[in-house]
Length: 485
Image (cartoon, rainbow, N blue to C red):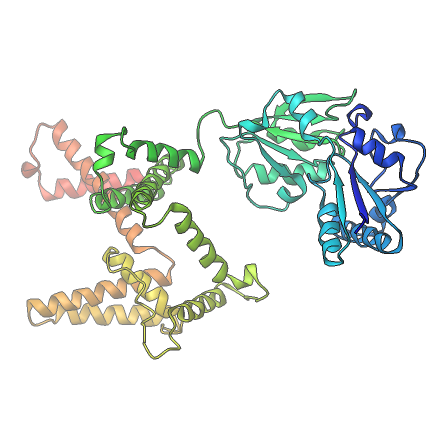
């Protein structure tokens, strides 16, 4: 069967970069259909064919998706009606051309043979201008797709080239996405009209990207790697290197079991940074906590149990599944509706419709600290309505538990009543949206500071603490409290 659709790449713009095959194909065609006339090499094309373009469709439709779909539909329709159609796109047909993919898919469905005539893509002259080799690991990203994301799908330790940065609004959307990964002062390079006489290269901090007035369809942005390794991939490489046969003897000896204490310690150091509101410390401690996660994932990878991508894949799939009001068509009026939906989805995941019953509290770890476990339990049951209608009921229950503790007849009873009392205190904290674990840690810190004031005073006086009277201690305690405020 003869070719019905020929798709030709015109190269990046310089007429000298049009291939001989492309030129011969155009020269022999009675009619040529251009995706757009916005191409610097158009005036140098062979004079024989009758040239048509789809530029009018860009004004008739609200989005590029609609434009591309209509172009594809018309090209395939022409192929059916005529003995063949020649369709021309900038650059190379296989690179960054949505219409080509749509045309090929529809032509295959209609059993219409398609031929692609390769062209020089935008990539070659752009890399020439930048002096970079794409084989060194260049990431290439369509700016129109990047602008739609909230976080860039990029490795900050690998250079990236962002194409189709065609106006200031697109640049602004791309910049906001990139700022989720790169600092606003990160130096980037804007490439304009690569491969043409008007080519220019401009370096600037990322925050200035959308302040350029001369952006057009021949604009690309080069984002160099971060000055020091900072990606998850690099972190994993360091961890794998430490565990390698010629790595660190201590790291190689560690197991899931031996790292349990370190995981807990790093978690509490993160909590301490949060309690103190120290963002610099939180930044550092989160990195240390992530090290523990990577450590366990590396050990699991070496044992053939799972890889980090498996853990992340499970977590991503679960988050999407449990948020149908964000990722599907369902709606949630408020946070309470979200929690109820969350519990229903979790019950379905556990298969509670089957004969085997599983408590909704089963997934709360018994390894949690007691206060945190109590809070998690109370949050969980409150989602299904097992809760006081107002905080007054909690306060009444708390007073009741205090009385029962005071009247406990023996040590075992007192221990049980104290547990109930603490559980009620946690419930009161929940009602006032206070994390009891954090509140108690902060109380511990306050006690340390205030008691340290007493110790410092005794040290200055050359006294032992045992020699200081209770009234002196009380006075110093109150002074420390006053200093805090």
